[in-house]
Image (cartoon, rainbow, N blue to C red; front, side, top):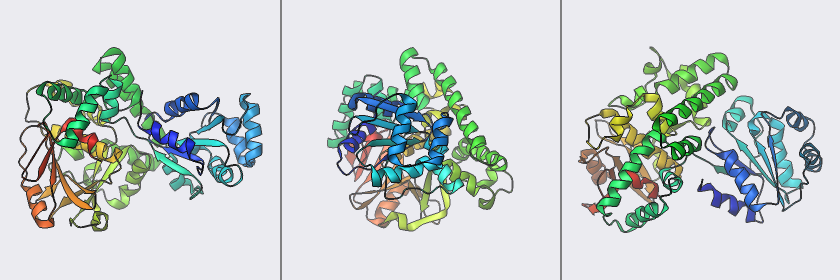
Length: 432
C-alpha cells in the first residue's frame, strides 16, 4: 500500500549528509512492511534483524558496537554481503537493545557510508524507563502513523477522488454532489476500519467490517501485552485503566481528561506516569488546553488540562462498541458520541500532518475544538458531526484574537462565507 513516508525515506537515502535513521511509531502502523519494501525497491540487498526476537544479534550488540565488526557479524548471521550504498540494514524493534541504539552513534561517526535504519514501536517508553543514552544529533528521525484518510483512499483505489478533494480544497469550490456523497460514504467506512494497514488490507480483500473488528481486537491484545512487558506490574494496571477510560472520557460533554473517571479518587500523581507511557508508545494523542489565542500558542498551555484521543479512529470505534449501523446510516442521528468520534478523527488527521494539538477554553463555557498555527496566524477550528454548524465559541474566539479566518469541519461541502472556511470531514488531510 502506498504510504506518504515513502517519499521521506527516498529523500533520506539520497541525502549525502544523512545519518542513521530511526523510524518511530506505534505497533502495527506498518513500519516493518514499508522499510522492507523500501529496501527491495531501492537497494540490491536488504539485511533485516529483529532485535526483539533475534537473541543472538541482541547479545552481540551488548558486547561490541564497532561498525566494522557489526557489519562482519551481520554478514555472517544473514549470509548476505553488506556493501555501502547497495545494502539497507534494518534494525527492527531497537528498543529491545540499548547498545544497538548506541551503535547508531558510532555508525554516524565512523561509518556514515552505510545505510542503516532502525525502527522502534516502544522506543520512547524504553528511553524514559531504562534511561537509554539516546544518540542526540547523531541520527535522523521520522515518525510514522496509522494510515490517514488520504492513504485509505489510495488503498481503496480512489486516488482520482483524493486528487479531486485536494484540488477543491485549494480553491474552496463545491465538489460535485455525487463525488461529495461518495467521499462521505468512504469517510464513514474509515471511521470503522481506521488506518491500521492490516485492518485496511483485510477490508479491501473481504469488504467485511466484521473481520476488520476482529483484527483490531488482536492489535489491542498486542498493546495490552506491551503494557505488561514494558511496564512494572502496578504501572501496567494503571496504564490499562487510563487507556480503557478514553471512550468514557470522550463521551462527556466536557471532554477534559478527568482522573476520577479512571478511578474514584484518582489524581495526576497516581496516573500521570501512565498517561505519559501511552503517549510515548504512540497509541494516544494528547491535546493540551490553551487559555489565550496569541502567538506562539504553545506558550499559553495549561499543562494540567488536556484531552486524550486514541491514535487510530478505528481502534476507538471498536473499543467504544459504537454500532456500525449508526455510523453508516444516511440519517443524521442525534448521537453525542458521533461528535466525539468526528473530533477524534480530526485530531488524528491534524497530528499526522504535523500539528501539535491544542484546544481553547475561556473562564466561562466557550470552547474551540482545535487551535492551529498556520503561516504565522492563529486559526480556530471547530468540528461538527453533521450539517448543523453554528458555533458561538468560534465566533467569539475570532473577534477576541483577530483571526483572519476560521475553519469549520462538517458534512457540508466546500465553501467560504463570513470568514469561515467550510471543509468537509473527508478533506481534513488537506489542512497542512
